[in-house]
Length: 253
Image (cartoon, rainbow, N blue to C red):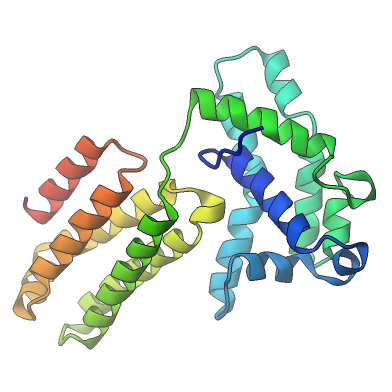
């Protein structure tokens, strides 16, 4: 079946298959903590906060699948069929939070740890197809995501170095950090959180005193250009037209 990552079921399925493929022996699965394996897969190192954000995004996936399926315009019996094995996967991911091994996670839903052939993976495939067909989420390419991350980090460096009032600098850096975290979590959380983080950043910067301070240090035009480019690359939870109108309204055109 074709792999879709424009819905939580597809992202959950891909995560489980990627974890299994990168640790495909029983010995590796029995020795490797699932927590560590997920962070390695996400290429996350650093603060506990970053690690918890990734693990939290992963742990939320089953609930997001359930919510998305319950919103589908199909019969309740069909919904139950699509969610038939989700409880097993959710129990497995619960073992991640208690820092148990991949084996404990996999065998919760895949007899003998044979993940690719499990009924749960097959069920997630069907679920992903239905969500892709009915309510696909916007996606962003790996190339555009890398560009987004680079732009965010570049702006963070400039803001950190600028002669700004402490309150303004702190607010901008906090919102940029949240945007960066949302970008890093796209693999598991999808692109919708990027919308929220982008609009929160625009709202913070759009306040009059922040505009004046950013303009004074020569960063306002740079900030607007970056946000407008990010908006064009994302166009996520809202349509491109709505996103453009929001940027124009908050940033003054």
